[in-house]
Image 1 (tube, rainbow, N blue to C red):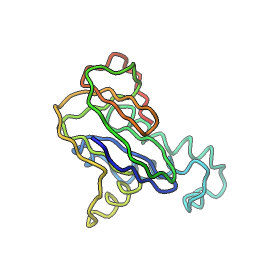
Image 2: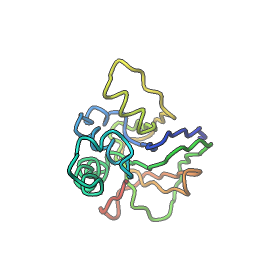
Image 3: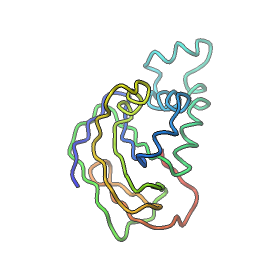
Length: 164
C-alpha cells in the first residue's frame, strides 16, 4: 500500500495499534513532544530553565521510550518530509529490532504531531496516513528509510525491542 508521508519540523511517523491510543495519557504525550525536539527549539525548553536540553531530553523521554520498546508503538523521527512511501506485508523480512503488538489487528499510521494534537484535544478529528486491518498478534517491522516499510507477522525472536 502506498501512502503520502507528510511530516512537519519536529515530527515523525507513528505506527501503533489503534486501540493503544487510549493508553497515551498527557504524560506520555509530553514525553513524545520532548522526544521530537532533539535540539531544544520549541517552547518546551522554558519548562526547564536551569537545565541543559540534553539532560532534560534524556530524562523526560524515558516514558515514551519505555512505551515504544514494550511493543506498543514505533516512532520514526522525521523533519520537514513529504514523499510517497510504501508499506508491504511480507512473509519474510531481515532481522529487525522493531516489533509491534497489534492486539486488535488495526494498524494505524499517523504523524506524531497529529497524534499529540488530536489526543490533547479530543474534539479534533485525527488525519491518518492509513489504517490497515490485519490479524491480531506480533509483527516485525523493517524499513529502507521511509520509502519502503515491510512487516511480517511472527513471534518476537529477540525481546530487545528498539522502536524509536
